[in-house]
Image (cartoon, one colour):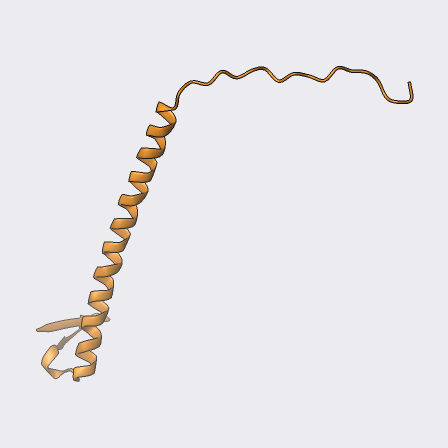
Length: 77
């Protein structure tokens, strides 16, 4: 099988076993990274969806206007 590295094509049978193994490890790692990125994006979408659902479906609460303290002047008056 031919492998292209840095624009040069190599026949896998001409590579040392360690190099061929490392090529497979890099390919596996890149595939795993792509899968993890897809999973992360899906989890972010799910979290955003449920956060919006929660906000949209919370019961209405009555809010009172804040009560202002009476102005009694300074202690020196």
